[in-house]
Structures are given as structure tokens and as C-alpha cells.
Length: 120
Image 1 (cartoon, rainbow, N blue to C red):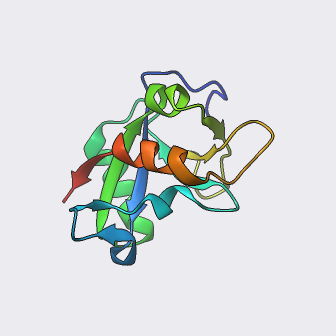
Image 2 (tube, rainbow, N blue to C red; image 1 turned 120 degrees about the horizontal axis):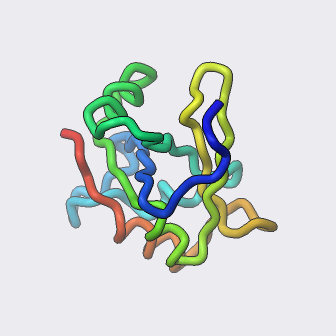
Image 3 (tube, helix red, strand yellow; image 1 turned 120 degrees about the vertical axis):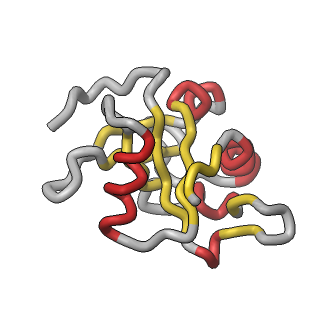
């Protein structure tokens, strides 16, 4: 288990499946931030970018992998929560707020606009 406090300078990584890619605008769809169970991400936790991507891709062959700074998530009034799993100590979630899980509307679009695609 990692430290539950996630610093602003830490990166969060999200695997993108092909059906969630907006080919017309060459970017992820904002739908990747609209999960009713929380947006699943992996935190970097001191790992380099290549190791983070490799760890994500071990579980699933994602079409793309994107990252976002924790600081950008918080600047858009979303909440980052460390929720490790037995098979993934890096697992975290992005929620709308402390009280509300699902992110809707413009907040999801703003988060999407702060992503950087790093793979491939």
C-alpha cells in the first residue's frame, strides 16, 4: 500500500479503449471521465512514465494511454482518491467531489482537455 495522500505533482494514468477515442478531433472522448463507479486511474507513485504505461498495458491492450496531473484534476474541482486493489497498489479514482462519484458535463470535458496522450 502507498501513502494515501496524493501530491499535486503526481501523474494519473488512464487507459483508453478505441471506442472512447474521438477520431474526428484526435483526442479521447469526455466519456472516459463519466463512470458512475468512479474514473479508474493508476497513480505514478514515483515510477517513470514507461513503467506506468507498461503496468497498465499488462492488464489490457489499450488503444492509447493518457496522463493528467493531479494538480489539474483539483483545479477543475474534482477529487482524487487512492483506492488500491489487491492486484494493483497504484489504483486510484477520480470523483466529482467528496460526496458525489460520477463526473458530468463540462467538468468531464475540462478534465479531458488537460490529458496528455503518451502511448503510443
